[in-house]
Image (cartoon, rainbow, N blue to C red; front, side, top):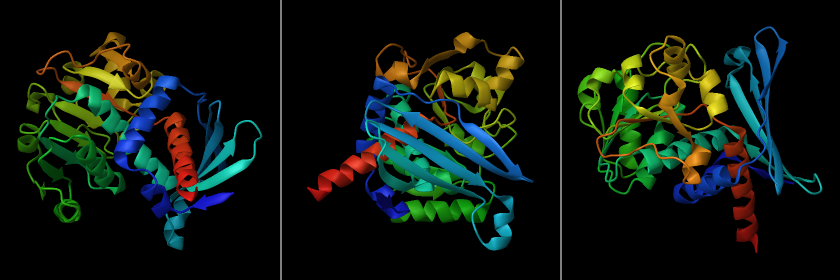
Length: 312
């Protein structure tokens, strides 16, 4: 069994290759049951996220240990185990955090292929946490017209640091302190925060804007207000996950601001050309993701096959 470090996982998953692989995986489908959550006592928890296809079986094991802060360790840690479907033989163990960061950003880049306006030139990253930089990298690598990246976060130091990091990677990235002004002048807005209050307002959105919401993963989390959701044509990673976990959809649905018909398509339908979200250059579009085990499985399988090909 091969063990892949975080650096090896990132190196094996070039953005354009991963996005295309995810597209094929969503179109083909896979078995991805609802994740299992187990209380371990106190605040500690174990999450199990299985999925399988005709070729491989995989499971992501995630531990949440708040006490790790006193140990100098990350609160959330993840490992991915990949097995052969026919024999059950373990094939690989992968760094789960790197896999999650990469596949999350790639899924948004895949959605933007269908939802963003062609020729998008300016990207706004809302948030400065660990995922934010990967969102910028994925969109920058897969949107050939992007010329500028703006970075907004609550901390001036953090947004300046992220912009500097991205600039060193040959992106024209600059920090901004006025979120409203930034929202009004960009083509794609990618939010990667843990906010429980809306940050982006519908009143600020311009015709043609694409909203990419990846931060909120619980019903009490919000990144945009109800007005933004109500004026958008919406795509999701999966109906099952987004309609039960995404506060940006669950809350306006509960309050009657939108109906189920506002959610036009999930990624499987988009990749099979069974639905259309963006109908015109002026449509405001929104992609909401909470993650699916199918993405982990597809990305892990790609790491494995890339390694196999390189060793021949």
